[in-house]
Image (cartoon, rainbow, N blue to C red; front, side, top):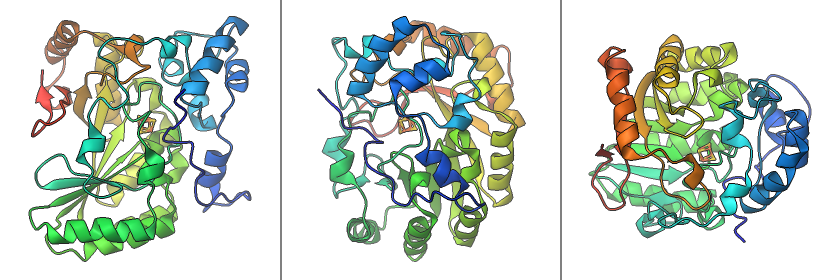
Length: 344
Ligand code: SF4
């Protein structure tokens, strides 16, 4: 049984009193982690519970309240609910679906560093996520072996320092913004001092699932860096963007960040032209441009989300006939060993 997950490591600092600077940590600490409570809170028929409990054993439940509030209770087809409720299907072995579909463990020259592409390198800045997405391609990633500490980061920073071809560092995870501001401030300060770096990219879902994460403390360290800032959000459905998310995005924009989005094409979530059209329009409302639409990475436990390639191409062709080009994401697949994402 696989129980390792981006979220089975305790987050660093959990303050239990509420004030402006700790509100997001409190929400993170209080995220729902019990499948029984999740089914009850969503008014799901009790027949869902055995499957949810089995799925939770494979990849634990985690859902913050701010995300739960956007789900239509009692509707098992809600596109947000489908992303977070564990199902018995996750226990079905499917040919071609494996624990590490992108072979990332072969591309870690240092603990916590993933170097796949020329000119950019990815740092696992936090082993934790604020939400556990059932289709996550890193649901089996050995985070505990790649869990960051300052000592490990020094080793990662030395790796980046000695490779002058690197222009960009991508903070990833887990979710990098699940780290404390103190740690991120230190890390970004170290990156700032490496002269060949030009860009800092942050791959995060936290502004979507706990918008209060974009607070004054984050603004302070992010505004200090000399590096160009790109925040790549992960949003799969228009219903994920409420007014609080838009406000968080406006704060990031005000700090000079370029906002992009990557989605995963998911059966039962966004596998229609209407859903993809509404997502692009809503992203534009939030000042975010669609970047990639990924086909599902074949990770064990997620086969029920798959949309075949032909259907994916037809959906994006239809989207192109409806929307201006800048609102049509690039349909891609990640293939281990390729020099970039592969367009479909
Ligand atoms: S998809 Fe992103 S936010 Fe969701 S579990 Fe995976 S790493 Fe975490």
